[in-house]
Image (cartoon, rainbow, N blue to C red):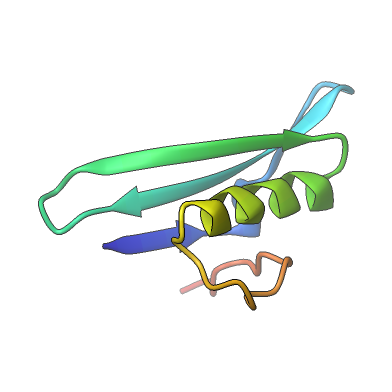
Length: 72
C-alpha cells in the first residue's frame, strides 16, 4: 500500500473552510481518497493526520505538519 500526502492538496473553498486530502493506493490497484476540513489549513491537515492515525495508516509519532512534495 502507498500513502500520498501533500500540503499543496490542502485547498481553500471560498471564505468558509479548507480541505486536506490523502490518496491511498493498494497493490491490487484499488485506491481511496480521504478528505478532512477545518477553518485553517493547519486544522484540516491535523484532522486528516488524526484520521489516518485512527486507521493505523501512519505512525502515532508522525508530525502533524504535512510537507509539500519535492518538485521535479
